Length: 167
Image 1 (cartoon, rainbow, N blue to C red):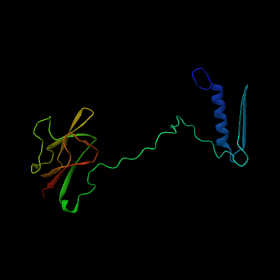
Image 2: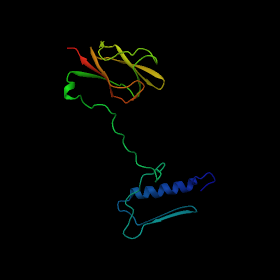
Image 3: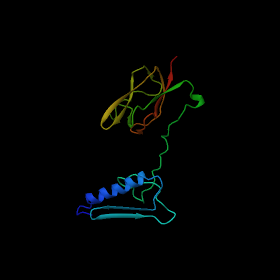
Image 4: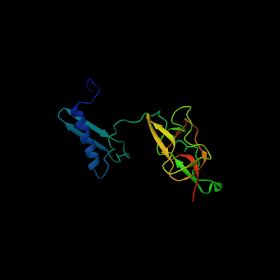
């Protein structure tokens, strides 16, 4: 190793030659010996355990003590409308962020249950990375339920507002 903790270029080249030899062999070897100038590298496997193939170089191995990532359960939102929700349409989150019912804290909410909305009418805001993105109705109808509380985090596609659509 060099002072900075890296292998000398000759050793890196020699290692590369060993990996190339392993990759090119049809029958896994039980011993490989490579010599370059003053450097020599010998790799041996016990009898009956030849090298299967050269593993691809790994940039940085994961720590052995790191737990495997556990997938999070989906957001607590109905995946499909319940049978008694027939005719309802859901306005969903177009991005991940924080849901706000009003333009400012303490201001009147954009919509309340029972309000009629038209296509393109702003019904809420989702804030993501200090950017306020309006949430608009995509159909005419009556607000049945605001499904997310003010200031709550929402995931992409989460239903925000239930509308009884007009025919």
